[in-house]
Length: 239
Image (cartoon, rainbow, N blue to C red; front, side, top):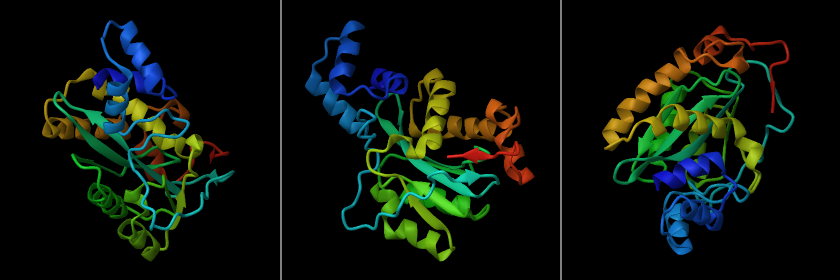
C-alpha cells in the first residue's frame, strides 16, 4: 500500500492494471485483483474518474461549480477542501484539509480512521472560527454534500461550489497540497500510529503555513499573504 501510494502521487492516471505492472517490474509478485482491491480500500482510482475517497450520497443535493473563470484577488474569496489517504506502518488514516485558494493558507485540517463526515465537520467548524469565506468548494463526496455540512455554510451566507463529476482540474489547488504534504513530510517518515501521524502533521502544517516560502506567492508564506488581506500581484489568481 505504501508503494501504491508513492506511485499514485507520481502517476495519478495509473489504474490498477498499470499499477500492477509497475510493482511487478520492481520485483513484487502481485496480481491485478489484489492491487485493485488495495486501491479500492485506499480510495484510489485512475484520476480520470477521480479518486473515490468520498463516495457521493444519492439523496444529497449537488451544488453547481462556481469557479470557472473566476478571478480570486483576495483572501477568503474561495476556500477548498478534500480528503486523502495517509499511510501508517499498519493500516492507514484519512486526512482532510481546508485551504484558502489565493494564499494557500490552511486554517484547519483533521485526521480520522473512518471515512465519515464527522472529521470534515470538525475541520469546517475550526476554519469558520477564523473567518468566513465567500465560496466553499469541494468534490461531490458524501461528507461534503451532507446537509450537516452544507447547512452551516448556507446559514453563514457562504456560497457552495462542487466539482463536476469526472472533471479532475476543478479542485486542482487542493489536490496539489496533497502532493506537497506527502513528498515533503509523509514519505520521509514511517508513521507507526495515528497519534504519531497527528503530531508530525501538526508540525508540518505549521511549517507549511508560517515558514515555507512559496514561489507562486512571491516567496512569501501562506500566512503572510492570508493576513495581509491582498493578492501577491495585481492579477491575483484565475481558476
